[in-house]
Image (tube, rainbow, N blue to C red):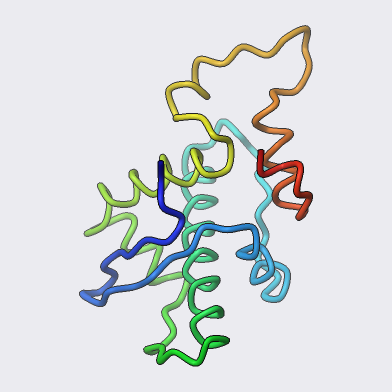
Length: 140
């Protein structure tokens, strides 16, 4: 089981992340684009996962503020971009695996080997979209 509440080190600072559906609230408030225009472009996909990591950070930060806990200075998306490409490469790869498992209930290997039936969309993709829209059936 993967814990949706985790901690990473960005710029030598312990940062809490929380991977839950409420993280998409920050995307809509900040106008963060989560669309993929070219699924074959590894850089675009990588950037999308960095954005999700940033949203998980903002989600944890918002909840900490709501609960009255002390929060440090706010990191930027650029901080996470630099971290994921540099010092945090291995931890970022683990975040991607954890994120996918929490969203779909399947490991990365299972998702990679999944075959669509009769041209229908994969259930995990459909579930992810439902989850992102806040539909409780998508958390399945």
